[in-house]
Amino acid sequence: MTQTAKIAWKDVTIRFGRQTVLDGLRLEAAEGRSLVIIGGSGEGKSVMLKTALGLIAPDKGRVEIDGRAVRPGQEDDPGVAQIGMLFQSGALFDSLPVWKNVSFRLLHRDHMQADEARERALEALDQVDLDHDVADKRPSQLSGGMLKRAALARAIAARPKILFFDEPTTGLDPVTADVINKLISRQVKQLGATAVSITHDMVSMRAIADDVAMIKDGGILWSGPLNGVETCENSEVCRFVRGESEIA
Image (cartoon, rainbow, N blue to C red; front, side):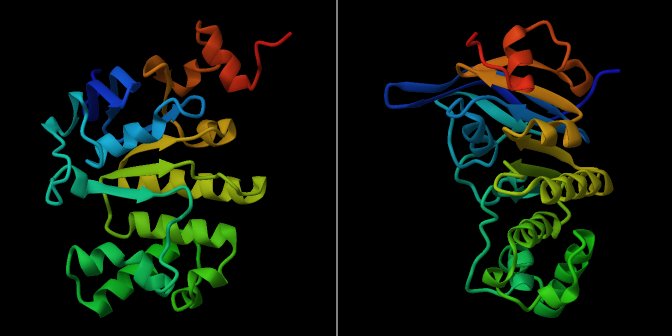
């Protein structure tokens, strides 16, 4: 059965000066599935997400959401409007209480009334297992794990059809990382969303992925379902996933 592509990178090339970061990259994220993109530092994983967010315009090729090209710099792009984002650092506003952080898009883009936005924020906090007393605290009063949960609540508050996760477990202890992985998996399933994550954490990859793609030298070195990544025939992918170097 052919899977419908929710997001498609079509021959995407990105250059920064003389450096080519993405070189004719082709990849699809299937609708309703969780794609995890792996690869070494500096290989272009974050740049891939930024092209889909419309933050960077490809030098060649294009990114499509629902078959329509993303229009970089256009705030009303219907594809980009479907995206909820969990940033690596959480990226919460220190000057705002947690509930206003969680409902930021609802208040400032969707122009929702404050009382309704607060209710939606509390609902989102419930979904990531945070108590309501967190709502009126400042981000500086939260632990690292609570900050990550609050950032996840913000990502899901608008009930997006697409979720992006940028290194969701970086800086977390193994137990907290496991909690975040389980919350991500649960929310993707509950929303029926298409998810795209980038990570160096192979434990996280195994916990949240349906499909995996490895980026190398500006292109996709290997892609396939999660159950094929451990036994794929590409030795470089296998070494990366197992954390093995080429040094004898």
